[in-house]
Image 1 (tube, one colour):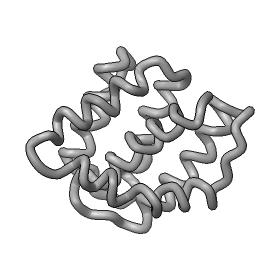
Image 2 (spheres, one colour):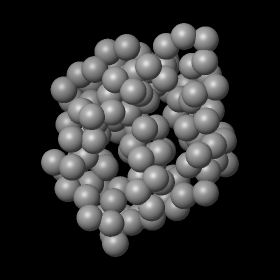
Image 3 (cartoon, rainbow, N blue to C red):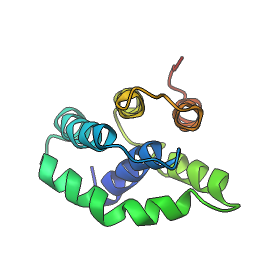
Image 4 (cartoon, rainbow, N blue to C red):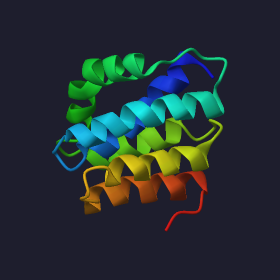
Length: 127
């Protein structure tokens, strides 16, 4: 998997954290752990540590936050989903998105919407 594909996956996972306009430690911790698990499952040839995942989050959170404000939010979410349409492990990514969304014990409607849209856009079952 290319670094651009990983960038797109991490952007989508970060959208789940940021879309409800609240960032909790539990969500970020789960992001870091699930990114490492995804890496091991769908792209073991790519070197990724939990520290690297956390650094990526810190470096990109403002960029992703900006994608989720204003009139282009729906288009930006759709673009993130479309850019990841041909990657392997989509069902695992949906599961990771759900884990991140539920990490703070508040599965916000906006988080559910992003996950549902990704599942639908990729043709992956999700309930």
